[in-house]
Length: 421
Image 1 (cartoon, rainbow, N blue to C red):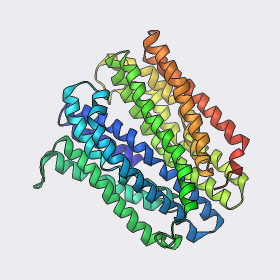
Image 2 (cartoon, rainbow, N blue to C red; image 1 turned 45 degrees about the horizontal axis):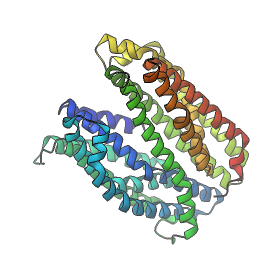
Image 3 (cartoon, rainbow, N blue to C red; image 1 turned 90 degrees about the vertical axis):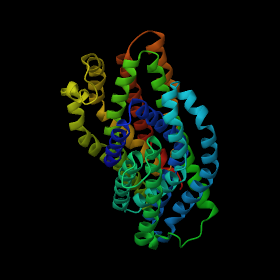
Image 4 (cartoon, rainbow, N blue to C red; image 1 turned 180 degrees about the vertical axis):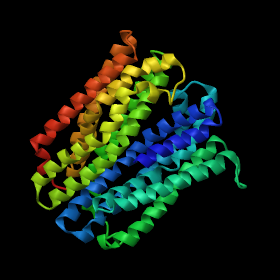
């Protein structure tokens, strides 16, 4: 997950050489790609819950039923989504940004990246399966290969090196799309090589496994869709305060996501451990795995959080050179550092619940807390009442704390122990 964050920085650095409009276009197009791809990203959690449960039950050859279901669902969804999003890319970009120069870069970027929706669904399905059967090192190795290929192909196609065509922003999109499909091939090869004893391409897909994965994955996909839409809405709200606030908010979100990505990796481990423990008939062991992984996550995030608290100006100087922007971001960044423990809980417990099959609970809590509480209050406390970015960031901390408490309450109730997968 850390390698993914680093690759995002590399992509931004490569495109940034082309100019501010190109970088803004890729940024806007990237948010749109994340938004539409959310519908297939949930397949990873559905496959992981099913495969992990079968692995814990000792049903080795049945583990691939969930993977086969996830791959088929990814194919069906992509057949619908790719032509739909490709057709609507222009009006979507017009809605998200009014600058013609930014649109000129964002529209072709989104259209090309739309072609990777199938690869995203396939890759998330493979990832969930490999994590569930304790082969996460294959996922890590394949992901690193994808990022290296992404950087190399993007560089060659953006600037036209080694005889490749000079494509600019479109080259960045093709580099990412091609690397994702090459990653799908690597996933399939590695899964056949190391996990065919778990039934990959050897067991027939059943209607029951297809229904199970679909009903587990769709709530998580809907949750991801609303989360990404909420992120876009947050920047829209902050945009009504001022352009300086938008710039600082982008830096704050980038730093926050950089810290959250390791937590996501630990959350995947929690989902696997919970699912396997339930499959082994040990619900109490599953209960304690969530808290153990949360403590590990807090320990890992402690040092980065401490840096945000003690040297915020040095961190913000990586993004800004104007003292006014550093001053604007100092208090929100320090607040982000203080909240690392809460963020760990918010990241780990939902993944643990997904591992137990409680995807609908996770969806309801996440969507209602973000859209029912945080975003309306952010508008009220920011543009409507005239308060600044600091007030929205305080509200964000309160919203994350309340979400953590709600997730902890549901986990302690242990209703998830009775879910049949």
